Length: 384
Image (cartoon, helix red, strand yellow):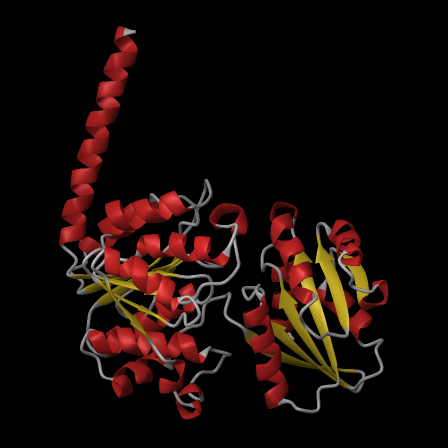
């Protein structure tokens, strides 16, 4: 018992020491911006960092998305290697790293999903000056649900008390405002139509107006004018999860593949479909490529329910759990004639299946997750 008591005391003393050390690192950074939301966190993190850097604000950013990265003051990137999986303590190391580089600002993408961990990340670790919530969608309901207001309340855990915050979330803004007012948070709604079609033409990948508008507003609040910030943003390297469009010609057919494995809700997926169809109005056939993973079954089933609200011609199931998801899809009123169960598959084999359809111009949208089979498909199209 005596030994256990000693061990406990040592553990507590170490925890206190670590906490105080972290506060020293945090206090050396003049401006911290914390990004949360359902979709677009990595993109907004990159956009804000690029805009601030263009305004001569020495900025380091850290993304958590499909491929975690540290973005240095000059725009160069360092990949983050995780030997034991993701853990919010990773943020402590970023503060230690950033505080030693004499920077002006640190832009952090939230990596917590559990509501309690989101609160701890902001209130005990990040203590941000500016908070950002990109949007609020029905996702990760197993941890933040069951309803959309539960998700909103969870995400609001990362807003800075007595600080400033920005969001493009329109539907739930009144609810967010009530939560913010109770904690003396100056929450501002950002209109996406403040960003024009002309502004969007500078991006070489598919970007959302809401993300750009949000990033520009944050940069403006930090003293960087729109023209300067936008000039920096157009040079940004998109996150691996950002939607990219690849065009492949095969057997007198044109196949447009939208890598949208990070867009896993009805609004985001519908946006991508409409965006591409507006660019290529003569597309005749739309196929959904759903990547399934054994450790993401909840996500796959959620997407099946989502597809009942979207018009498509064929669903190509790939990955680890295609048979299970096919059965689930049929039970949820997706016609068996619209399901092609391919299992774990190469990009070339996917194309052989796709070109069997009669239309000449085909749109494929990859959803589900870029991990596993999804990454293989994206690599195939990017190389071709």
